[in-house]
Picture 1 (cartoon, helix red, strand yellow):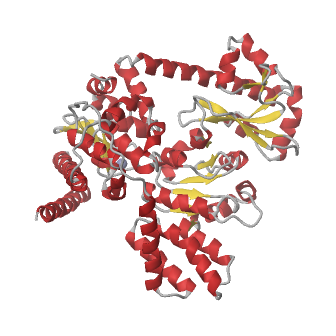
Picture 2 (cartoon, rainbow, N blue to C red):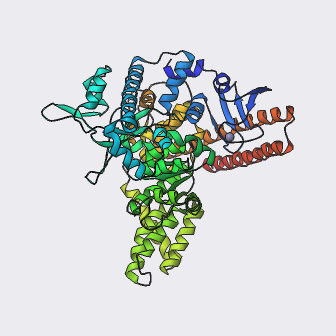
Picture 3 (cartoon, rainbow, N blue to C red):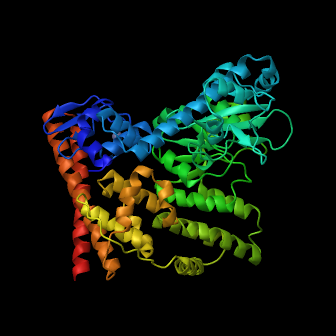
Length: 584
Ligand SMILES: [Zn+2]
């Protein structure tokens, strides 16, 4: 039995969730107030028989014990696994444990260094100019402490000596990037005479550092290099202090600078975080997605280029909601606006434009839309972005807008759009089937078969849009599907997944499949998954209904659960129709 299965078997879901939520037994289920949204009447149910949970309220989502911990702790699959393994006393594989222990040590080294830099900023005579700098930027002492800001001495070996005295070896310091090595093999402190910004992950572990010069010298900013615990493209500055507010306000506001984040929090705007000086990445979006589906960007106009906006539309599809963009007053940073008046900031956030409207505005404002050449330029820039919008109604809306502002017919816009689609399809990689020995797996055979089809036949990717991660009951499979759906390149799938999942992933990739009627098999399989999901949801809903009726819940709640039943039957009806269409 794999570690994952063992943890799943030993971790009783009622017990695990019971540590976070007050659960009351009611019939065959347990219910409580949903920990993911605020509510007065409990619509959160735990099903001991299936070892699953579901929220019938605002979240209308559910899963198994792993997905609960991931959502609740803001953890990725691997961390959730290790956390649960720890609680239920399962020893995880030596490799995985070595990895965790090794990583824990690296986080610890960073934390010790962060504390060292922090003390220097607050107390050392050498830190005076850094203290003056942060005071000049209007940061309160409380903010310095909250974000553990620091200062690194103008020395080649001050940190190295400090850490050596505490038992950290040179090779460990090299591994976390606190020191660097010259070609001659000599080592020295990487960060010298800089204002230090420790970077934390969602769980508050110190992953690395950002740093800024205190004068006008260049480069202005530097970061820790890529290390086993630090990856710039997946880090979000301030996320450890913003998690609760992002959940509560159901929105994350992304800015670019460290100072912008600190100022925002100092002024009580706790849902503000920063991408690390780059445009937003897919990895960052998937971290935020565990907290909210609503993202608002406050970017400099030079980073908010068309290419970045095109990526944002991709994120919209994966978030299943609109990404919005704040338009900052000319020449101002979020920092400036917030310090001037938080009300102005709030109104900017509220008035943020959907990313496509924003792009329309930026593109057309630079053009003279009465000139034929500019019209054509606008269409060529905007159409590829619009074509990425998955939602038919929204896409149609923007096609109409574009036709109107370019003064051309809807028909010609539409035919230009279909040319783009044909081009894109032609560029997609050809199928490259991998066939090796079959690894029989007992659990969730349909889920794994479906994943095998998708992973081995890249041409199916265009068809998987209707398939939702929720349809996968097993959170391992759900993780793999989620990563697959979001990544452009299947060969990079492993990078997105925790190493604890690799073995399972490999077993799916090598599953041997017969190469005939692939598309039809996929359609069958996807329908079956959706049907199984809906049927199990229906069972859960009925149990929830029985339990709500038994405990005499308010009528509004009962009728809401009843309404959801109608929705489920409609969807099941549609599946029935589609199955018949396929057969005939
Ligand atoms: Zn909920």
